[in-house]
Image (tube, rainbow, N blue to C red; front, side, top):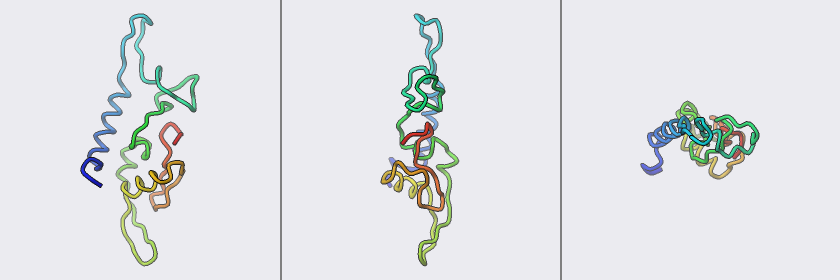
Length: 118
């Protein structure tokens, strides 16, 4: 992986996404503040979406936008080789199997997005 796709960059992206998700805008014509859940695409809950229902396409969705999952590491033995698996392994798996509910590493993380879709 290059410096463009590093854990530090992914953490900064998570932080930026959280800031953007918390953004509101005053709409004078409506006489109220509008938030992301008011305007987002929410395919699994289109009638009354909350922020968690919004489909936000991002590489961090492979970790359900969760910094703890991004930081996870585990020991894995395959044959006679023992090594450490981390976000790199999970990301590679998910890019190849985006509909998986559990990767094949000992992390056993889902590739599904936080809102429930791929």
